[in-house]
Length: 250
Image (cartoon, rainbow, N blue to C red):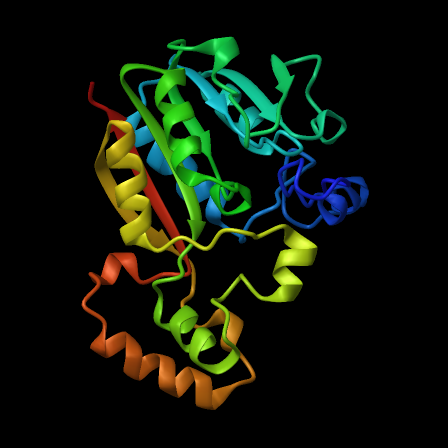
């Protein structure tokens, strides 16, 4: 995290670095730790294979240990990876990598190079989602696509969490300090950010058990089920994690 008030972006990575050093991670790909909801990487990889041709040049943002990067490489994609902490990445001998702060102008080095950008569970860590969307736009070739995910603050469980605690699900003080979740984004905001940057959405969906984080709170589960029935969101957009694919149209 920035040490000088008012001069640096807020980047909270201490717990992330500690987790990357832990051994015996249950959720992994070929021994590389996965820092995401169980099953999310598999869900997103299946979507990537639907919308991105094999052999495409793909940039993974916030690649962590490299679990998704290796999965993509194993399935025929040409992968470049980036992360804020280079020591977390375990594949320096196999996959091109550059260290960067995604709050900055991270497209300068590779403008117009990639067929696809993969950004799993990172936009909630970024101070300015519009700047992030514009930078991703610049990284892509015309017709290129970005695949990304973020906690779904529009879910009924998240709305109930806000009613009960004053913060959305995945955005409590503990989530802020431990996971660096600093920017909750409604689907409405996400839509505006990426369309204003020059993207058109070709897929919107969600993943994960809606009530998982409410286990042990039967009253909140009951209330969230009522909110879920009242919600005008399509059923496919009500899960725990929002997932989308957007295409560069200009």
